[in-house]
Amino acid sequence: MQQKKVSLSDIAKILGVSKSTVSFVLNNKGDKYNISKETQKLILDKAKELNFVPNFFAKNLRQGKTKTIGLVVSDISNPFYGELSKIIQEELNKHDYKLFIVNTNDSKDLELHVFRDLLGRSIDAMIISPCNVIDDLKEILDSTPIPVVFVDRFGDNFADFVGINNKREAEQLLSYFSTKPKKVGIFYQEVHEVSTVRLRIDGIIEACNKGGVEYELVNISDCKDLQARVKKIKKMDAVISLNNRAALPVIAALNGIGLSIPEDVRFICFDDAQAFQYISPPISALRQPIFEIGKETVNQMMRRLTEEHIPGKWVEFTCEFMERGSH
Image (cartoon, rainbow, N blue to C red; front, side):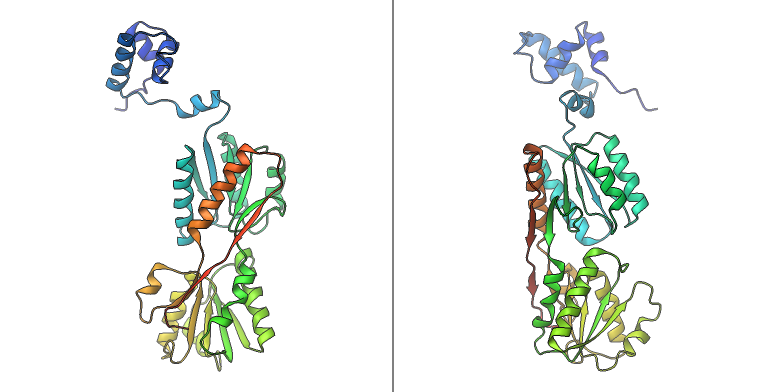
């Protein structure tokens, strides 16, 4: 049976000392308050014997802060957000901050719910990769005094943001092909309103129009027979996948209808994946600087926590093209 959690009062009662004396010792203030070395040792030994665990939140709330940051992401199963969350957590640990990570599944209703839940936990600040529409969210943010930094997807144009310029990066994709394509199949696997995908679509379409390149846009999120869909795209000699989740199904569909990469169609993916360097052929991809994005997000948060009344700052990184021969 689970035992009752040991408190400061329990230790004080057992040893016949005051609760404040126990608190001072366990917070390394015994010498400051002239508590004898013998008493300090008794308290420390008893706390260890009883497996005493400090109440982290109570301690920090007394200091006016919890030393916790909330991180809200749209899909933690996405490798991009998984890696980004890991980096942000590691960087926050260096500043002695803890992290709450919550997932919204790109649901506006769920996002509002987790926001209110995080605020109820008295977090010190929030890092957000928001859903597509933040009108309802903005009302909460405007009434909340805690700092907010947007990452990957921007929200308030006047708030801090760290990420990439998806439209500008997508415009570059055509130039990476070894020869200019005649017709490009553009594949993506997301709801159409997701801001990052929408900007990538806008960028590549603009580049195609400027370069006189034909294109066909294909959302494969609900495509049951992808092979048949791909087979219907006439004269396609190049493929762009607008995220790594769409890449593998499209590659499988191309193989299924007998089209070889890069002999029949050349292939580039916006967003790299670890698997791309191991499959045959290795897939050329645009790699986002996830480590730099995560590190700068934490830098922005630390800046915002110490300097409240400063203008929002946008930091946009550039991507790196990973040449692996499929293009």
